[in-house]
Length: 359
Image 1 (cartoon, rainbow, N blue to C red):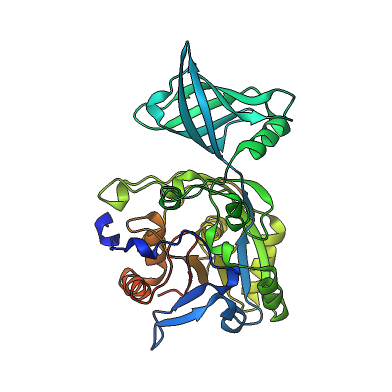
Image 2 (image 1 turned 180 degrees about the vertical axis):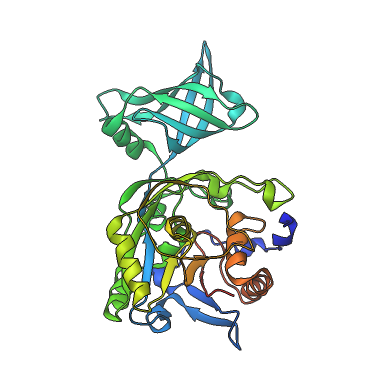
């Protein structure tokens, strides 16, 4: 399909720069292409009444690391300010990162990040540029620390890596440390939040459990590729960045039991959906999976693992808008987004939610 088929105009004032508080006060647009009234305005707090006892919510328990680092590049007697966003670990001391401005870096440069009083008594986190990708902003950084010491340094220095459409309009601050992390985050490794999960509070999770709705967890470490624009004209020419993910035996068995009893599998977020679709065989039966997925879902894809999904409102021409269009149908999603824009819904990572059922 042509990428421009997934385009739409979004007024800037619809982009949420902060989340609502409490989290579950967000609005939620329910989209059911098979219903007489396919678009219903609800709220996230309505979920216990929307779901049925015996259904199962599947959450992504990845934990966002403070992956945004600012530093000074040293080359001979010259210096320059640079910032990097860590995107993927290579080993215990090396990371792939996106650098800005990338033209200020080349292989062999040294970078000092911050001034840490208590990290190995060094006062500064140092790295050197091992390599730089030609024609892009990706670099490989080799840090002087490794393992848990490096993790400690990054945690002390880094800021939450807010999406570009927020970071371009305001700087990260102390509020984002909590706001840009789900309440159930456990497995450290993401450089972007699984944003559908940001709407859940401990009180809402308890209400769902009391309703007889199961909760299960998978892991997908969201990479910076989630923010990269689709630069091709045809979806067939786009290559998805691979992301690390896992579903264990116990979770696979539990979800198979849910389906066997007639319950629905509801993915909380596109990342959970991608794990489940990667771990399901042709029959829809789940098996353990631990590795990388680069599954790219566009209209025409046959879903085999998920009965409904909760997600946020996504960018035009993005792989995420393509995914929800595959799930519900492109025309109904265009209608849903037009309805959301006209009725003041808040878009993107800190915005409102959708509850989607398949076409």
